[in-house]
Image (cartoon, rainbow, N blue to C red):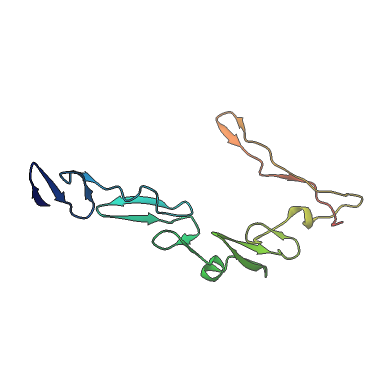
Amino acid sequence: MTKLIFPQSYRCACASGYTGRRCESEVNECAPDPCLHGGRCSDLLGDFSCDCGGTGYSGPHCEVNIDECAASAPCMNGAACRDTDGDYSCQPCPGDFCGKNCQRRDPCQMVRFENCTSCAHIRFPPFPIGLISWEFPFLFFPCAKP
């Protein structure tokens, strides 16, 4: 801190990260939020840091889109990967595969019944049996593809 003497007053030249007449207040470098796309800002002395984890972005301000297709090749079973802003999609899932990464078989396509026109996945909520809670992940009615 450097004091500049003026008649009847003084003014301090504050070190980086401080403000106020006597440099008594720390500057909040996270206000306004410099982190983009949902990045979390941490205020440091005279600086800030963005945590971009889970946003699909990187860089000092979470401004650089991560190409998930190039980074990890997430699509399975021959599906093409398409990078999007902060995410990716696998399309089209081949044959009877489904899921974000085309990683599982679609139960509606695995078994075929005659005269069936639609297939529905029905999800039951968990229900308690004594002290144990049981959950049925899905019930399906398989049908032939139209």
